[in-house]
Length: 111
Length: 117
Image 1 (cartoon, rainbow over the protein chains, first blue to last red):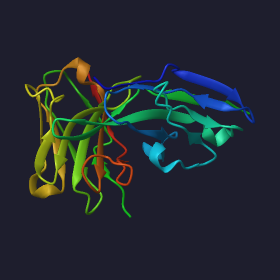
Image 2 (cartoon, one colour):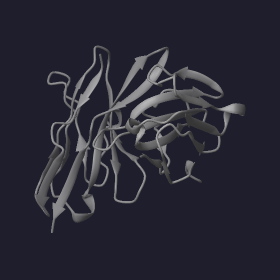
Image 3 (cartoon, rainbow over the protein chains, first blue to last red):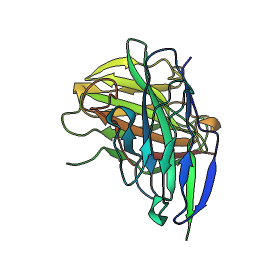
Image 4 (cartoon, rainbow over the protein chains, first blue to last red):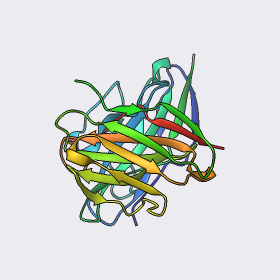
């Protein structure tokens, strides 16, 4: 069965320090992975998707199929990065595609 | 572009009462999702509509939860009767096409926070 694991509930880093939010997945098919973010008092929104190999707000994420990981990284954390981050896996089931989420990691950037 | 609209924002009810949530997706979005997010957890899919048809409701507790999307636009999610464990944020999301693909991501509403006492 498909599953997304985010091992850290809370991650605290100092401003300017590197950030790595971990995400591991379990899926027998070809994975499509995403990172969604929820800033304080805002709605959940897409941050980036692996297929685009994009850098959004300085964040990048590389899909590592050997390690079944999709870690989110940023070289220098900013205070405005403080938020809840959810890793999500798109999978095929019940005749359609669905999105399953990890439990999330709260990133706190200390000034 | 107007976002996904949900109401109410907050609801407090007693157990065994009923409650309904409303969602208006982004105009033109064919796919609509209802997610349940319990405190400390990630969103969990309850039901997915494609236009006005149900694509997946395998995780919807059908003995107490029901949802409809008449005319393929607005949707309502109902709980009757509510239990304490239904306390959660109920998120509605929509996407342009089916299946939350990389070029058709989910757009979420602000959610309805339900407290069952």
